[in-house]
Image 1 (tube, rainbow, N blue to C red):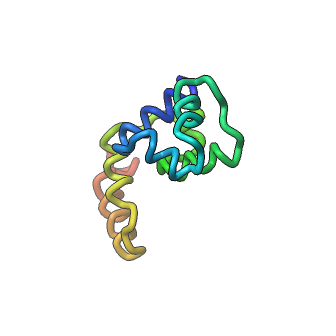
Image 2 (image 1 turned 90 degrees about the horizontal axis):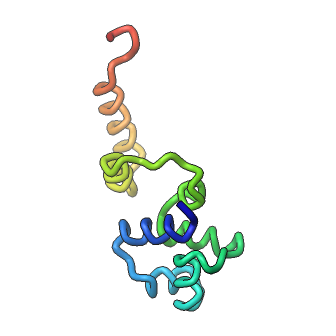
Length: 104
């Protein structure tokens, strides 16, 4: 997939319109539309702002990251904003659900 396709997919997952992303990124709607259609490649600073606006890592936007399952995306989304103590508990729970090699 190209950057435009990845940006479109991320925007749809986030439930945002092109206008909302363009406003967050600080570009004209037409410019953002051209990026999504693959007609234009953004500058590095704009690419970074797109990643922030869509809340995705640059590797994912550039297609360098293996796609996450929708379940993992939901878990990561739910974990955002948790306090450190809550994250530690979540980590312990995840470890308890995944058997160690000596238990298999």
